[in-house]
Amino acid sequence: MQSDLAISNNMNEELTVQNNQIDDNSAQNHSTASNTESLVASTLNAFDTRLKQLEEPEEKTLISKIQKNASFAALIIGILLSLISLFDIFWNKPQEALFRDTEEFNKSVNAVANLRQNISGAVSI
Image (cartoon, rainbow, N blue to C red; front, side, top):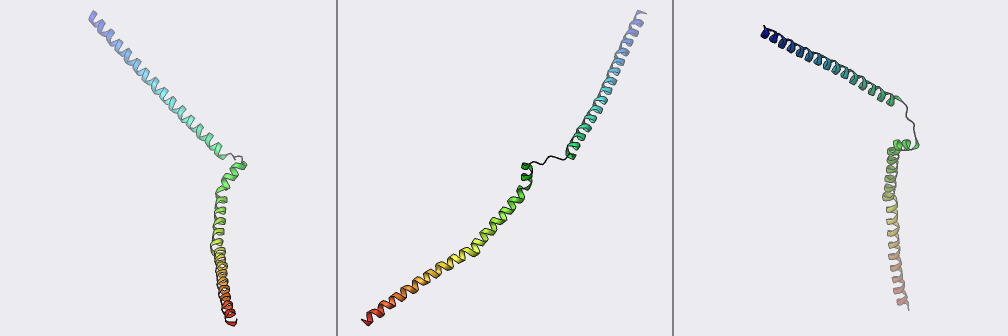
């Protein structure tokens, strides 16, 4: 009888341990579900905050205006410098060459004229 009582006590203890384990698992599952719900709620709040920040109009300072228009200004300056360079290559340089060539021609003509005068002056003497 004592052995039956010991077996019965052992079985009761095992059942109690199993019930405690089941209770612990259900509490953990409940807390996991609660943690998941709070994680989803905090994620949605973060998304709402980001969306509100994006929808709010931002203050336009002088620096932000300059930064937004800097690429356009750089493009205009680049085009302007390119046009000045093209003008210099196709207009100023040919004119300078023309003036230089004209000056060389005039020097040559003057040298020939002086030589002719010298020759005709020497012959007439």
